[in-house]
Length: 196
Length: 196
Image 1: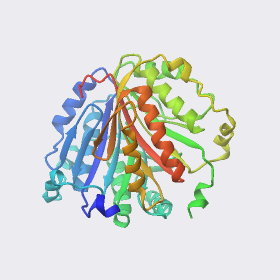
Image 2: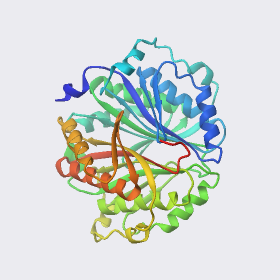
Image 3: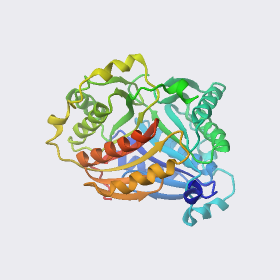
Image 4: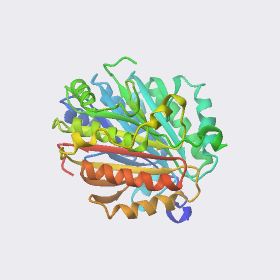
């Protein structure tokens, strides 16, 4: 049954929404999108969220770039979304799977230093030992350059946005190598007036 | 392995964040929290999100009340979160399972009429036929008083907030009756300046 819907495509995707807590939210969103190179992913935006799809490396590159360029305005910015891989692919976005593996936004954003907090949760689908996959991954997080804490229903990461995304990418990548269909929710916050 | 972590508690929970796109976001969040009765759920808030836990009926009641009272300000408000049931419960929040089933916010918010858009995705965990559970549920959505459309990685609901939450509740409830551990992500938006 699973194959009927999922195929074997390893196209990744992310459905996310960016929330600048500011009267200038429209300008912040528009100027952010101008700074981010989205040429290597399929993209569709509506009034609720933006969906991008393509190679995993580019999906993470674009999501990180959107968050970083919005956060560097100094406004309190939040971003929520779900990464997904393994189901389903289609011909419309599959053309983006021919792109090279070089992330196009990395150079421009590498100089932006931005602390943030992130809660994420991994959902390996269609496997009965999913809790093992999750716990295995959470243990690995401790080796990374971020503070890792366990919270209800999620894992919390604190650190620089580059390190947070590195941990997110590696966690997602580790699980997707073992499980066909994986989703990962995340909730990012920067420049919050509330101290942790 | 699953039982080791999950137990048999049917405590539900929701990790959510509220995002008023306004310079007044702090005031909107604080005044919203004043209007919502959270006495029947365990609650913890930090700089990223709020986690509530208790009986399913009260978890949905509080989440809907938070969104409605924030949206009635007329500001563009977004809310993102993940409902979860089946894993894990603990003694700290389990005391809230003794509450009666009467939702405490329903009467006060029943008069608020608020259109919104919502994308949601259901994740039945630990089962190999999870796609069947999802598709079964999506078909049922068509009978409800909301517009239902299929989008990448999610299902979109448009309508009044009360009807959207009714559909979310019923979808979640249907799947959790068949699958022990279920999560459901949602992304709500009201008063967006972007037309659909």
